[in-house]
Length: 221
Image 1: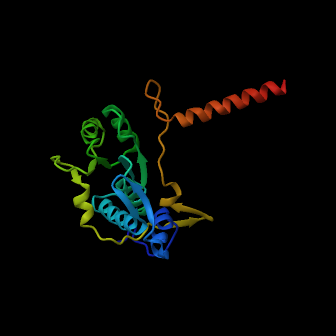
Image 2: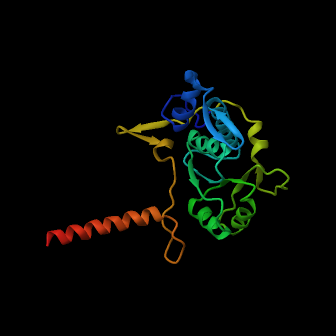
Image 3: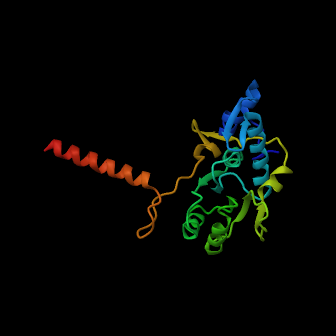
């Protein structure tokens, strides 16, 4: 299946880090190791392709944001690369946040699809009811959880998808690549005044810049 309808090959993170390893006789090498065992590059590439096709089936398109609320796992890695491969944009959140925090991220990212695990599901359900747009929840490891309207089992949907997926292309404009891989990962800004500080890395950079400017001003006196 094609992620964007084009056939011209182009740079894509999933192609570089997954498909290339699988194609160049490194598919049998270990890509991930975790409590459940190891995953090879070939297995991860195939899973990522199936996830990408699943995301396309539920309506995700190039440049749209997909919110990931998953613990570290092969499903997280495969989904992250799948989003890149279809030309969409990932936004990741911790799995231990409160519903009001998830509501903030849903509204701020505008994500129409959230990939969430069973541990985080109840809090994401509560958050989505308060969000401006109620997203589709793609639930990983739902097990015995009864899914509701607007919720889809990750395993069930992914398992029936094709194992092949063409990477979304990029286009050149004025010598600069534009398209999906140009901005492949969304990073949240600091919350508005009165809200939780949601980007401490940005705050620290601003502090360092102010400190450097103040030091330079002192030296110039």
